[in-house]
Image (tube, rainbow, N blue to C red; front, side, top):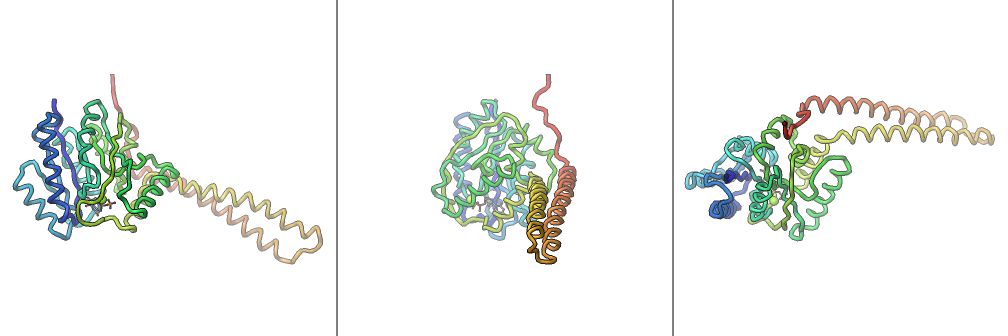
Length: 313
Ligand code: UDP
Ligand code: MG
């Protein structure tokens, strides 16, 4: 049976890109239908993330002209991740698999066909991975690579050079729907779900129109959210740092006492400097311990599913 595909496109002030994007994606759907790879009822779903330009008017117009185009409009700007979330949750029951792709077509839409092939081979998640960033500015490239390295240093499981361009099956999305967290970081959630997955590779190109909606401030917020929603490692670092300082303070004690034996001690120096180190280290250890509990509470509050069953016999 041919799968019913849905392509979800988050849009924030994308009036300049939408005409080209919708045309490209509709042609792509048409082609895939002709090739018998997807069902005729496959859809495109645009999510307007509270745009202040004509984005919603364009989406409305497109959906009136084409019954396969759906639209969702947010009351205000809730951010890229929430736009993706709304698209996924709203269409998962109307399709067999969903591909999410940015409205600027920086991610090569032509590899959706390859994603579908991998899906038909039994993969439940297919990640789009950029293997060439030559079109990105040096700044963007540097910050992006730093971001992936930092994630792995902080023990957050992500797919290197994969953003939010991916295919997920209905099955995976039903499990995904059990994640109720507010601080969404989809690039961390999907790899943590497990299931058979594959990668497809493509060259990242430039925006078809308009400019980036991710300034440096939003990028930093996003990275920080990724780390803090997936890792309590920074809290553990406090504890280890405290331990190191605490043990160093013992060395300091010996060092501070040496002049006493040599008879050239300055009065009051050792008794000032030793407690500084000693209690500094001790306080950090205590903070680290409190941090561990805060981390546990955080995990409990998120109430993520404790397991996901893939098969039963
Ligand atoms: N986007 C969104 N809400 C936001 C910011 C961005 O829905 O608050 C969408 C945007 O319209 C685009 C995608 O997220 O489809 C990625 O944004 P962008 O291309 O500007 O980011 P970049 O590729 O420059 O990192
Ligand atoms: Mg982009």
